[in-house]
Length: 369
Image (tube, rainbow, N blue to C red):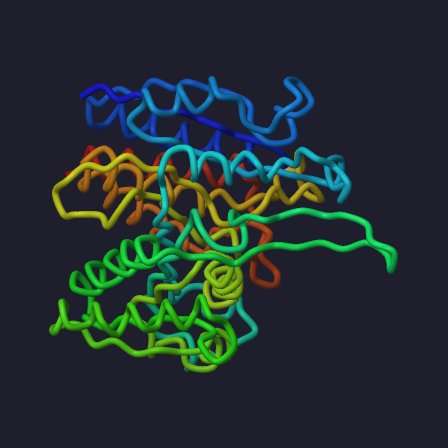
């Protein structure tokens, strides 16, 4: 089959890790007979430099015409002026909103070979396998009013946290449906002791639980969830939460996996359904890491695992996705590491070396059966 993908490398290490993602797809294509065509465009800081905006309307149009989007990362010190009216992050926010991708799915898996790569005790990490579902197009990042102004006493700023019943209901449906496909436990994270929006969230979650009697629902305040995520992470199966809470909790979850360079994500317009193809945007959860850009130190595994999600969810290629995930496991089992997950005394691989090894193993796995 032929597939067309929008490829948006972005800034910093984004182009480096995305290059390993397309390299992997080319290897998959050689082994499986599928053909992948790529349509590239600039987003983020590099788009601001070229076009004056982080995301052009033409880029959204291009993405809509493709089977899926592979995204890198945006931002960096060059564009960090807090007074700027245009920011690199406008690109990813605009893509999510413009493409209607309200459900961000972030799996967090601890590989046994990396248990010693984190500061947590091995007994805490063994068996961790959870998914965080983050609402992606509402809340503080999007609601109005959002502005800065000056009053007699000085400068003032406001961000609004707003959610509608429809926004809350649709993301909770994703959470319940994904829990049904896993271990049938859903944890809804809010701040209902303080925020009115969270009280609405919890009320709706309790009402919807009646539609899913086979799923056990519990509730955690976000500060308690943050503590429990590192204290006893195996208690979690599926976590569903609002935009900003999900952003923070999934970055914290990188401690479990050993590095942000290990965590992939998919942004969809609903719950993934077995056997069905869905348009989505796929990206590693890490940022642009400008301090290591161009040095070959970036870990491409998060992007590679995002490609596995792309293959499975948007292209309907579960066999190829399985081969990619097996390649990651095989490389880690061999002790091969990039600097962020390197063990003492080992010689870390460069971004390019790790990407090549993963592509080679995935291709071999497909050819052998």
